[in-house]
Amino acid sequence: MAELATIARPYAEALFKSSQADLNGAAAWVDQLAAIAANPQLLQFADNPKVTTAQVFDVISGVSKTALPDNAKNFLRAVIDNGRLVALPEIAAQFRALKNAQGGSSDAVVYSAFPIDSVALADLAATLEKRFARKLNLSVALEPTLIGGIRVAVGDEVLDTSVKARLEQMKVALSA
Image (tube, rainbow, N blue to C red; front, side, top):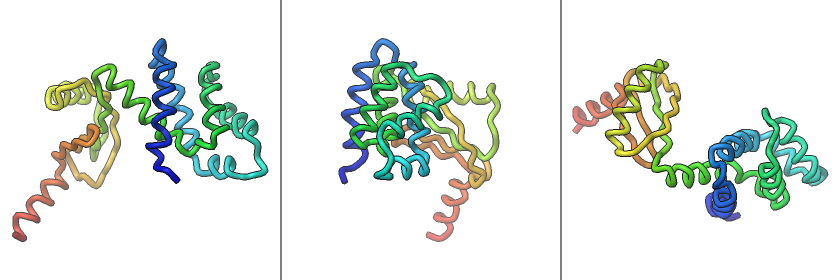
């Protein structure tokens, strides 16, 4: 089977071109559909040969938190009819990348050992935007194994100022 990124690219590009009028709205519903499609039980249900594509569509649209607009329903039907439900999370990721590229921003994940309050996160966002020289859409993920500090991933760039990383650096320096 072809790599998911290769399968997802035409869907993401078509969705991006057709959603130019409301990119933020499309991003919201495609992320929601991607989260639903990432469920292993749903994928197992969809792979069942006794289940029709209409039944899969009904289950997904029924689980959706909000009513899907017509373009979202058409997109979802196309994905399901072509057997590409497993690629939906990758389609959403590529759509976000296209949307971010147009807006000159990037998604960033801040891994922290402890919760970060909104004031500290705003200060951190300003500092990181200067460091990476672009607007960042921050999300925070807790990772207690860091012990302290943060690790920031922006695309393929990583900034690691965690205690764990510093301990690893000291270990390497002492064993050399």
